[in-house]
View 1 (cartoon, rainbow, N blue to C red):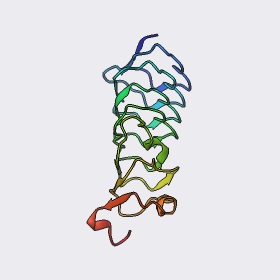
View 2: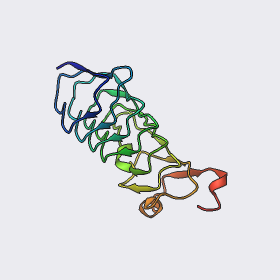
View 3: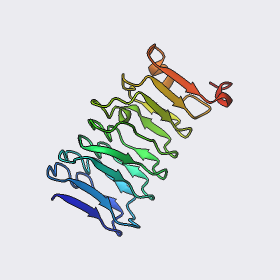
Length: 178
């Protein structure tokens, strides 16, 4: 299996569906694809991706834990704003992805999803206003965080208050409640 096009009528990509398909070089989604869920480990371990750009369909809502884990060749990964749930370590060990734009609908964020890059370290990350709860730890290479909300996400401040090497930027309108 060298590449896959997900057809229009597929709504769920099941757990471990393409896991360890080591010769896979690309994933595309047919125009009008109805995928709403990519389950746990669906595309993890597809290590031969090379300079891949993955653009998820607009109606997807859930990306499971470790769904794209260990795919070192991903350079671009676009998550649509329709996604409200991203599983733990969804993009862990993605060594070439320089930045991750988070969807504006996500309410809970496992910060390990920001630890994507070892070779091209991202130093900045924007946390959408919709994020109300965080778990996990921020990567050490992040030095600037842009908080778009008016309240600290639950656990964020408690878990990262001791970091002296990071600056958190907030919108002026949020200063009163932060």
